[in-house]
Image 1: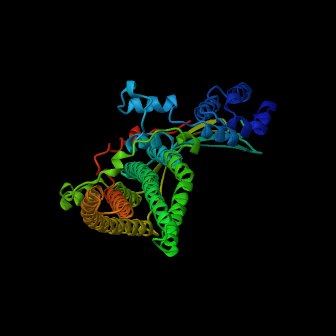
Image 2 (image 1 turned 45 degrees about the vertical axis):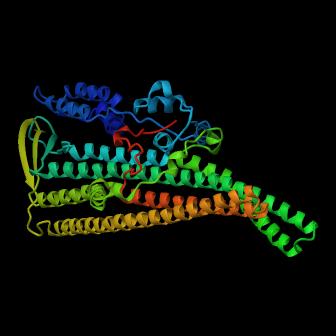
Length: 509
């Protein structure tokens, strides 16, 4: 007769703990085998041996590793970021920069863009999300694990050599053809969409950086022009005050001129006070603290150049928008994922087959069995999930078409707006030429004694105003060019293109 031994009772009490903690499993199962030999016949030890093999095979092998976040340490690392970072310079050297040119003496838009790709936290976030979808591909490719079922029965009246019936059964799931492939295809498409979303974020970072750099440059240039205007207005006020002292003019003329000088000075003070804010915004666009750009020399001259209309043919711009836009490519990837989802739901109409080989020790008799089970599609044939997948595929198709139409509209509007800004810039340039011709004539008359100093200073003031108008028109053209680049998601001003998505750094210190 087979009685429950003390080691077996101990195993019952500790079973859950030792399955969870695999390092103790072998010791416990060994005790179970030794105790079983005393009560079972020679063939019976096959049962505990099989159970031991299955439990050991199911033990986890990857330990948990904690990764706590230290807010103070992260903030300190942020404050220590700099364009002189050795890690940044090594990254730039890997992107094609000559090592003898690093560190750069002047930082232009392409260089700051490279630094932003290294430092900006938004890219770190989308890259982490992309890596999560890559991990999902591993999950989609996994095959179902076998299952283990055990049972023990005690018979009060046993005609055999033992009152015990012990059984163990394994379950193997054979997936229907096409399910695993469809899951893998769906996961791959979603991963590609996430990769393209990271590229979309990279372009948005470059676009914001260009806008912040343009704002900073426009303010610096506007300050220079205001300083020139104030110098001329100060000269005019001095000349008029001298005439007022001589009784040649009335006080009203001097007061009006002095008031214009004060207004110009107020505008200059307001523009000057914006410099720290613009520097901080520019640093944030790069992913740096504000102090990191305080001593950096910026290359701003390329922002003064515009592209001629003949350099931007409408057909090529539209083709570039439709082929290069990352959100369009991501929408296509999401549509592919929806198609794969539909394939998966259709494949689920074919049931999985579950095979269950088993062994039992039944009161001294060794019994082997083989089970087979599958779901019968009597009540439904997965019509609901298939209909949902078809509807989702149609949604993705409509979203792609809507996005494509919006992209074409943005590209056309952006091109028209930029060409209009070029016309405005050309008109401002002609006006400046006319003012310059007039100023040259007044200067000759002044040298010949036919005009006075006030009139000569007035023409110089008109020249400065014409220069300001040209500069404002150029800045508007640059903003329109930036909007057109956003519609195409490609640099159009001849600057370096974006690096490959795989070259964008996963994380920065």
